[in-house]
Image 1 (cartoon, rainbow, N blue to C red):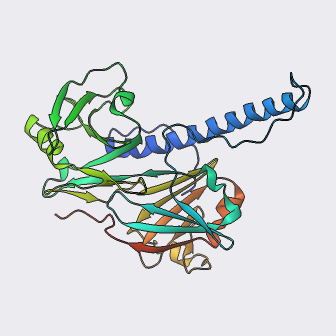
Image 2: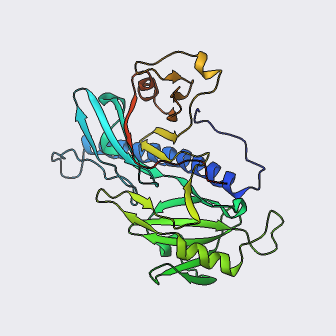
Image 3: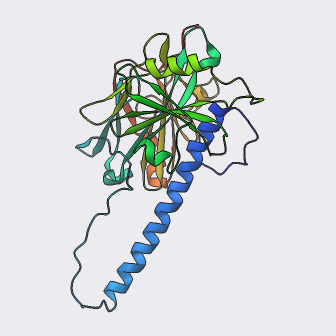
Length: 309
């Protein structure tokens, strides 16, 4: 998949809109970073050509935008190794050539869905962000409040984004998880009942690992599930990579060029012929060309799968 501008969607499906909104946020993030670089460069030129005190300014590394999470990484010879943890609690290591991106700019964004076993219509794609409930819905009171399994609050907010849906909002450490719901009387589908929202609140749990990753721990009949969006996204400046687990190659992709690790090139990333993952990349040529030598290894633990019927 190549990151390109797409026409405004006409779909009214919240799950698909959430996927499209994530892609739009990534494009806006790249534009913001480009503007920041332009401003910093202009400031550097002013300093070099007649700053007010004429002194030497030591180089510094700008911190990543507030709220972003940097995953652990280390160097292994000429390679950069990034360890990621999925919402299901499974892990994988992404191995890239060291010069393909700036590791200090790395940001990790998880993604996923929760299914309700036997009730397909009550499954939801979840939206994950860093911060607090209050920051997500500033100057807004919840329209209802439910309780999790420990008695903690799970507010229910009226949404004001283009998807025009409401949200159950969970707070797990520094991570915010939003679960959408149709408003009452919405022509796209029925809203959950009070009892169903109360059930969601009491059965969706989560924890933060020692490395800072979010893991969701749904209680039956809620289960972690696959989604069409990446279960793990890595961003670094203008570069972005999305990993979708348990999805391999199509028949046409398997007629393509092989990489150094036996994957197939897809024109915008790689896919694993054994069905372990599919991956898309977008950004600078140095980064996208790294697909030829990229490796996903040490895949362990529970990973997203199709929900039980």
